[in-house]
Length: 466
Ligand code: UDP
Image (cartoon, rainbow, N blue to C red; front, side):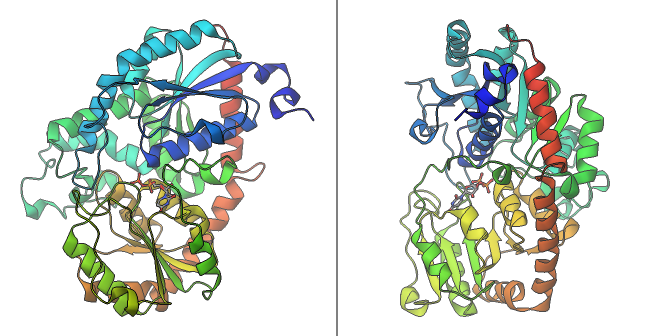
């Protein structure tokens, strides 16, 4: 049988797209999903990747090639762990440290040109340093934003908010100030991190915006019905084509790019629960909490008497503290609760037993929840998470934020509101409506599928001699 590449004819069969994801779970996933979408359209794919948090080449079919960059480079300060890590600083250091090795690797790949002509590089918008290298070697670039369009709109406004003296906030009273041009955002939603120095954050966000403006096009894992207004704003100001082709995890059917092994036994456990009865609790791959927050969370969940599936990553606690659950917790939740160290999250959210998602609102988690029509309890930690949570609550009205100090009584009340009360039911109905829209946009003729066509046409029209 002819492969997609062969059957699609000469135009794409020998074309090769180069890709470079940022080496963090929430960035690897959408880039590798995009790789699968392009591969399925007959393009070959070369993935450059950092030597740490590397994807597993064994999981990928022929037509993929993996090129490690910067083996031997010191990585201890390149991998942020926990909500209080210097994420922005790590991104800048990755750019600095991998730039020269990437130049060597890219040059070598272009010279070999064995497996079809490389036509462009798709890179994570956090890798401005690699884009500079590509420019130098005459390789056109496309940029993948792994967050929503609203986030880019907010990042573009960041310098003006600094000039106005709103960022960084000078005192507590400024935090709830609404930002008229960025409704429904408030000053507090723009505080990217409380641990990275302001200068570092400014430079990091500036580089992101610059990478978009210096590209031949920006790709988003979002969809028009979700972020119509924000996509229009991006379109009006970046000066390059905008491809909203999400939810990418729904368009892609490729291999899982999980860095940790998911515990699939939780799916059997979910099979035994009633429809829409379970709260799924997961804070993504980086966010962390302290011992007291962990205790309050455990007791709030247990006291709610709502069935729950909770992901407690090995590094969920700040620093190197060992996770310890309250005495008697396991007995108290026997039968009603399950704890795993990593879940097959997309399948969990798609399971009929799941009725709510307590999330940190990373963009992937937010979009995965929307795609399955699951309403959210929001507990954002840093980066774009506050922006996403705000949209969940104020724009899409498919969840609400759990603000302030984590306290067992508040947790219990909010969890019950989401799962058992009418307010949660209304949110679930709206979430299901968005799920229907997400499903339609990836069908033939749908907005995202049409934009995938445009993107593939653009890539295949690029000259094959770089
Ligand atoms: N994820 C997973 N299993 C888990 C927790 C998370 O597969 O137990 C995946 C999740 O599906 C998502 C990614 O990890 O695709 C996390 O990305 P997100 O943008 O939500 O958050 P980040 O980890 O970047 O903070």
